[in-house]
Length: 399
Image (cartoon, rainbow, N blue to C red):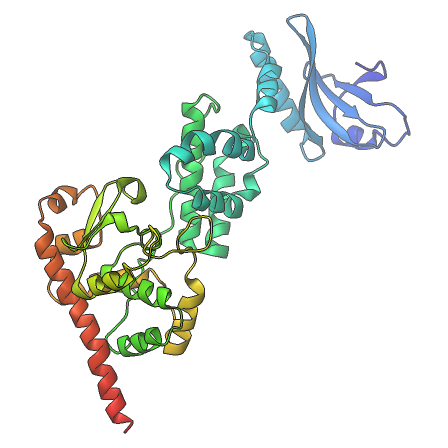
């Protein structure tokens, strides 16, 4: 402790006056009211409250906060609490040292969470990395123990306003999982700051291709110069599988005789093997593609070996067709919607799309593939018929 110190009854007027005299050394002033409460004044005039006490024979200086951001009354309250802990044999400085050694959110994510959780529980790290880097960066440098519920609430509200409820909800879900794992691995001690932060209500997306849109869609699809992507989008519509599974479709997963496609458990969202029926027109497309020698149905030139990014072609198709607000995933919803319109039951639709919710799993498991194939075929024929018949009517109308 610097010997340039004195005792002083802390008042705002007295502390405001300190530091006006120039000094090349830090100066300490001790409160006459609360034991150990000290004000440190730096040569630049910055004033900081701290508690200076000998604890278990060793001098400790515990930072409390800056003046005047922290009032004298607040500083005395903190100092009183620290003195109470010391009287109980607790050294508050030990906790502070532990927090300084604690990992930041960013360090925990990269050094622990990705290796110990993400790599073993997710098919790809790309989506998790994207959520962390884009949505949690404002908390990245904070120590785990310094993140409070109010910080998470503010982040959630800000993300909801700037990027929408879906992105905001995915961010706090990831953050909640991170804190749960940190607690489980004894790297974080305290309540999970995400608990009590309620998700935004999400509006379920209902977009699909309607009957009057199908002729334009198929006409534009026929005009697509890339035959691989023509087949890709046609199959996406007729099978209704998820895009990642369609892109990574392999010939050894397809049984052309049984007209089925078996997606391995490690490649599905629910981590269960899924068997999907192949409708007649889907089967025709696959048979014409079987001549390629690649193990992939849709080969690609990148390191994955298969098609990776079909968005450019998708934009071309939509522009030619004059369609807006249609996503690639909406093709999956289109098949399910047309099945419903043709009278298919929800369990049949669920199995045809590979849904595996916990409530419906047992129902799906009892269904045979034949009625599911019949439902998919019926819906697929209706989709193709609507596209072709209406296109002919429009063509005659222009004659």
